Structure formats: structure tokens, C-alpha cells
Image 1 (tube, helix red, strand yellow):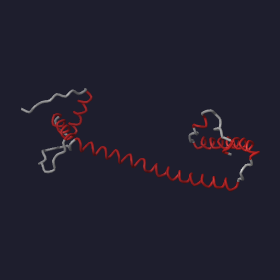
Image 2 (image 1 turned 90 degrees about the vertical axis):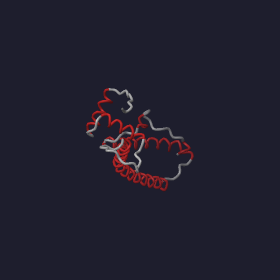
Image 3 (image 1 turned 30 degrees about the vertical axis):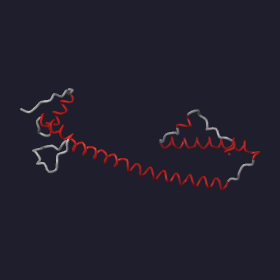
Length: 160
């Protein structure tokens, strides 16, 4: 007589194991034994294989993990590639804009800096409003930071 062990399972767990055993046309006892041993011990390559209808649990688990990882990779790689291209375009556009702005605008003399800051903040608020309208039109999200207090972030005069 083979030794017995006792395992406590919920009804749902027991039903799950019964369904898995039935799928493989195995008895519940032999299925659970193979799962338990397969989980802890890989079969030795030189050992003669016993009659085994399903692979060990560790092989099933490894195959499932590989399929999940591959599916995640497939689904995210296309999105990442497109996003990367869009970010590269935006980076190039921003770089060109900054260069153009620096080349075409003179430095503000000290006595006029406060007026320049006020004008810059007004024009910046107008620009933000235009960007929000574009984002609304295309169904994009509005930048959250713009709505925290309803005002533009404060700029220091020495930054102008």
C-alpha cells in the first residue's frame, strides 16, 4: 500500500484540480501527484519516462510564462516604436524652436525686464489656451499641472 498524505483544499481548488485532471483524462490522484512532483523535481534525462499524459507542472508553468512574456512583448513593442518616433519628432521640433527663438530675439535690457516678464507670461497663457483647445479637439488629455491653481507657473525675472 502506498503512503497517503492529507491536503486541505477549498471547494473551488478541488473542483479546479478535478477539471484539469479530466481535461487530461487522468485520475485526480495521478494528476495531483504528477503536478506536485513535477513542480519540485525535474525528470532526469537518463531516467526512463513513466507513462505520462501531461507534462510536469513546472514545464506547463514555464510554457505559460513564456507565452505571457511574448504576448506582452508583442503588444508593447509596436506602441513603444510609434511613441518613440513621435517623441523624436517632438524633440527635434522643440530643439529647432528654441534655436530659432534664441537667434531671432535680442536679450532684454535690465530696465525693461519686468515688462518683458509680464508680456511673456501673458503670451504664455495664450499659448497654453491654444494648446488646450487643440488637445480638446483631438480628444487628448489636458496637462494636469495647468489646472492645479488655474494660473501659469511663476517665473523669476532673472530667468527672462
